[in-house]
Length: 92
Picture 1 (cartoon, helix red, strand yellow):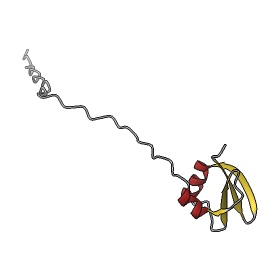
Picture 2: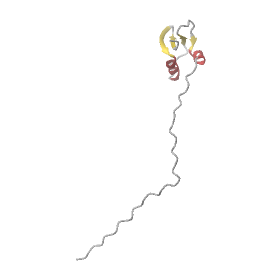
Picture 3: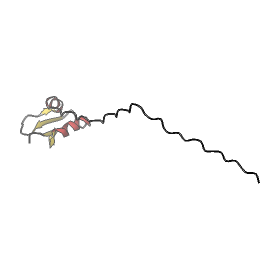
Picture 4: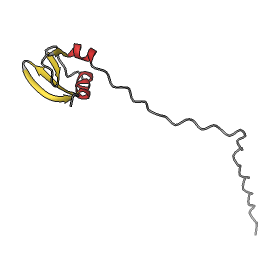
């Protein structure tokens, strides 16, 4: 699998990680200036900032939002209630 990457920090090797994970590490600020990366099967270590400029970034996901429904041409006015009739007291 070619999408695996190894991370070297202070001469200690970690991984393998998916390329998406490395990009996520960078977004979260987890990578430091002493970090180097190499792709699986490669012998050369590259500084993580250089690696990020070379690796193809994933396509952004497009989120579909539902289209606003068109308002009806003539909207009926809400029905109004007639006021209740007042009751009169009968005097006995």
